[in-house]
Each structure stands twice: as structure tokens, then as C-alpha cells.
Image (cartoon, rainbow, N blue to C red):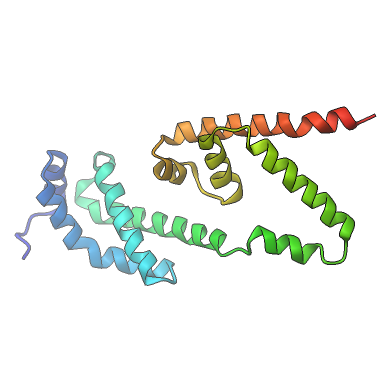
Length: 186
């Protein structure tokens, strides 16, 4: 099955555009990559996704592999980092929905409920003045805890563009939310 080519030789071939060489690297290291991902995650399906993402990242960054003969170690570092990111991502997603947090926190205080309802209303209204892209970046980053790289992949923009849209959206929200409060102050 394996012709005896070292990882260094296969990496050199991948850098020249040989997709079969990368396929050989994947087959050679998939079991180890999956074991590393599985050790960091609870869900085997997540481990599969992490491996796929890590191999894609490795292919995209193959020129960053400084020592091609140590490709395996370089790849496993990518797998570990990707698995840790996925674990953090899953932890954020497992948190209670915001609506439940509101109802649990405010069961005894109708005045606080009214204040939160007004704040939610003002936030929703202020968000209508953002572009769809600004709104999506703001929600994904600030409310759902995504990273700019994840947002970029999801929305088909660059990570830098995600940062710019977030900055513009936050500035617009501050301006909208500060306006009526400033006018009501004595």
C-alpha cells in the first residue's frame, strides 16, 4: 500500500500540485489524527469533522510546514488546535438560551423584567439600522461567540472584513443606544 516515500517527499510533491501525494498523506495519518481529535472531544462525529478541517487547513498551509520530514508532528499540532477550538465552540453552544436566562433571573422582580424588555426592544430596533452583513457578524461574534475565521468561512468574507463589519456595527449600535439615553438625562 505504501511505496516507502517519506513524508518529506510527499510534501514536496504536494507543493508541486500533486493531489495524489496529499491523498497518500491523508491515508497515512488519518488514524492518528482521528485518535488525537477523539482524545480531546466527547463526540466521535466532531472528531471526524475536526480531522477533515485539519487536513484542509494543512493542505492550504502546506508551504508553512518548515520541516516536511516532520509533517506528522506538524499535522497533529493542527489537529490538536482544531479539536480544542471545536471543544470551546461546543461549550459555548451548550449554554442555556438567552431567553431562559432572562426568565430564570427575573422571576421575582417585575420591574427588572420591564427594564430588560425595554432594553431588548431598543437593541432589536437599533439592529434594524445595520446592514444584514453587519447584523450577522455582530450576532455571530458577540452573542454566539464565533471567531472571525469561523465567521469569515460561514459568510464568505475575509477575517479582516469580519473585523471591520463588527467594528462598524458596534459603533452604530453605541450611537443608536446612547442617543435616547443622552436626551433623557437631566
